[in-house]
Image (cartoon, rainbow over all chains, first blue to last red; front, side, top):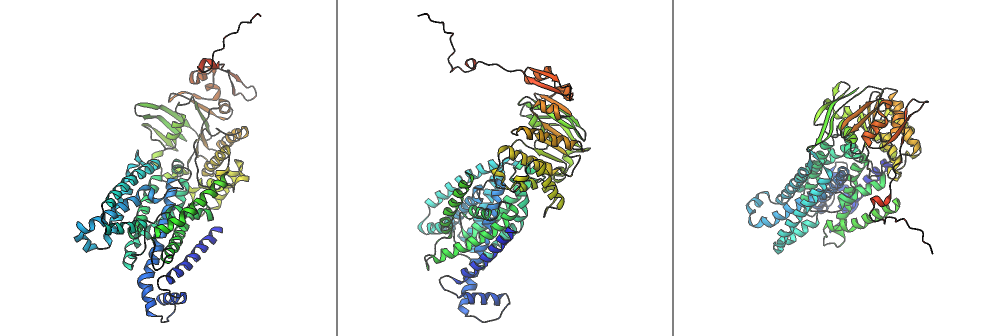
Length: 344
Length: 280
């Protein structure tokens, strides 16, 4: 019953923040107009609004807000799922090398783009960085997964350690490339490493849509299995859960979701770590609830963060990764302290 | 019916379990006992499929355990492990309900609810049902885990319960209560294998005792057959006195006290030199 209210609360807050997010920005669009345009698009009403509002909404705001929702949902649900299989509330997709691999490849592409890849770049254009990032995420996650196997089964503790090693390696290589980049490249790299939804177009949106929608549809179905993981992997096996399969499935789905997100929006920290904690604080730890609720909460958090990123110093824009970390870290500390006090 | 034939397990060149054969009928409670490192827990993890035997066969109800689907096996066999670490604040009821996961996919059915509440009740956890598992004491957590694996086989008479040191860390009442539950279930056709260190409790509740030494079967039989002073000395290296209870006709073991002088094993303690009485 309580969880039903939480879902309703999350969905309503999401709708409200979508409306605000669409209305606010460098050019204010009255909320009434936003609703009218959306209504016309959905065929509910047919009223003509100002064409310039419609253009801004169509070309800039709608794809950006939609991308924010997708990326937020992807990061939120992946964080919850990864915390589930690692049985560790401090785990996040970054821990198994997904984000580090993605950023290494993205930085590499940015630096090489001008010199080596210029022909390729002219063909695939904007997608080159995104594709590189996705490839990096997939390769490092596969590597970590493979390294963690002992006696044919993935061992979670080794996976964590392998993740740390791969993270360090990717971090070092990224640093090496960054140190040797020129001014223009540095700006692009920094912008990308701090995360931003500014590059959102309908094209980018559709290019990541399947990579994010498939995990969003399939991960909630793993809730019961991830609950059993809480007892320990051996115990979950005794309940007939085929834990090796569950781990592989979750790692693949999270790599898809996070790899695609990082590819289009750069690195947006703290969402994957924090959102599941907020969700658990609201309605308990059952993963059948935590997974879908984390997707909703992630979308909400990112939608609001993007609004802040655009509005705080308007018309200048701040990187969204900075906003999520700025808000995220105190909230996380608050949760930690509250948890500590509750235990003692 | 469980049939285990010449089971062996090795780590590198070291043989941990060596040709152990067990036959367990429905309605029997078998206690496994032996010194630390004798291979008791390894034997349990071979029986529950956590480890794969180097050689030998495990047949459950006439079918090799390898031929079962994991879900099917989970409805026939449940294991209480020694180590249970839960780090999320699930409630006692939620944890016990996980024992029913092999039976339903969407919402718990009425049968699952009944199994859970009855298992919680027999383990004396009714007042804790809504509480967070993390806020319970070690012994209470142990009872929650017991309730969970009981719920897993609640409606499966003929199922196999593997209990690895089920009473370690429990108070006097729940040591008895746990074994009494196991015993009562065997009367309805369940099979129970329990690793027990307390020989007197094993004598009291087990139908048969399997004594292991260095991964081999030392002796297998009724408590009166297995628990002799000579066998206990051979396996544990401890002198005991075994008396037969005339009331229950089960052996009762009284361990001889070991006397040590601290200065003989701790060189940091100065040996006491007998002081001669001084005459002033």
